[in-house]
Structures are given as C-alpha cells and as structure tokens.
Image (cartoon, rainbow, N blue to C red; front, side, top):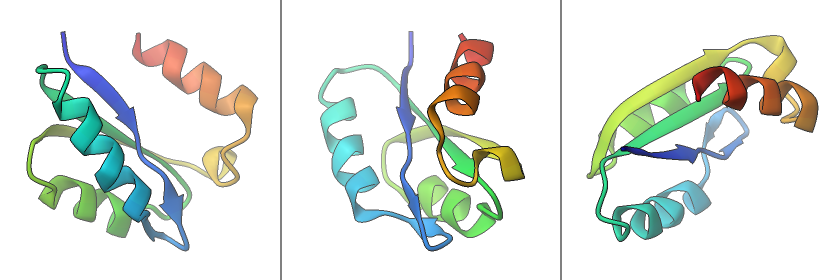
Length: 81
C-alpha cells in the first residue's frame, strides 16, 4: 500500500515543508504518492513530480481547494480512499 502525502502549496509553488515530509514518508518503506490540491497548482505539481522518491502525483486543481479548508479537503481525501 502506498503512502499518500498531502503537499503544501504556498504562493502557487510547492512548499519546502513538503520535501521534508516526503523524506519522512519514504522512511516508512512504502511507495509515496503526492496529492497536490488547490487552485492553479500546475507549477507545484511539476515540482512534486521532480522530487526523488515520488511514485505518482495526484492533482486536484479546483477553486474549492484554494484555501485548504477542512471540509472540501476531507471530502477529497475520502474520495481517494
């Protein structure tokens, strides 16, 4: 089973915190998929795809994810389970 890492997007780009979280996720010994959610996240998704150890990047590029509010993010995560 893969580990799902929810990437942090800041200013349209991938946050440095996401790369550090990836290091921890890789330590679990399973493949790591990265979810990049927000509005206009193509640059962040491209950055996530370039990180060493990422198996797959999932993209949810919609306005409802722009502010990372709990309700829409929770629904998104449940839909991926």
